[in-house]
Amino acid sequence: GTTTDGIIKAVAGHNQSLEELSIYCSSKLSGKAVRLLAESCPGLRVLNLKCSEKVNDRSIEVVLRCCPSLTELSLFGCKKIKATAFRMFTSSASKKRPFQLRNLNLSYCELSKRGFKTLTKVSSDLQALHFSPLSTSFRITSADFIGLIQNCGNLTTLDLSNYHFEMDAILLEVSKTCSNLTTLLLDGIGECKSPPPKKGCMACLFCFRFFFFLVFQFGL
Image (cartoon, rainbow, N blue to C red; front, side, top):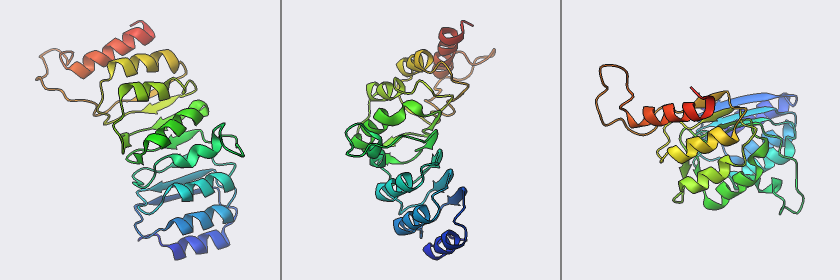
């Protein structure tokens, strides 16, 4: 059933040692309930709020402030998330905090220009970053994304599935910057407009790009 504020209040009230919580597709969950959860369960390490329509950056800012052990956060499909909640971790913040997150999913969030710039500044410690796909409220360019990648040298997992961009320069930057990368997800990128040839699919533009990336990275 739908997760409501009442359910979260009960869970937070009786399970204050909670370390992991996953909530999916809750249209009735308010930001107030998320803030209550964070204040009541400061030991949270993993929080998944997929497709929670009312959750915004103010709520997530409280979560990040109250849960210093949080290392994994998924906000998949939370359309009100702009990524401005991470500003407390920037050098310009009045009380800068250490950025503890290692796994972050911002797929289908509507990142603002300010939020994206903030994310770029604080992303150096991330080990897993998921944009499946990346959605923004501004016109993002390849240069914008390359700027983010250049600050993500510790990534081991990068998910760019369903990403519609000119990928050549981005994949080259990934290969140069993310030397620890073990998982690269590129499902659904671009379009294959030509029928596959009889022997393999190297005529597909994307496959050619990915092959070029592999050659550059691994010397295949």
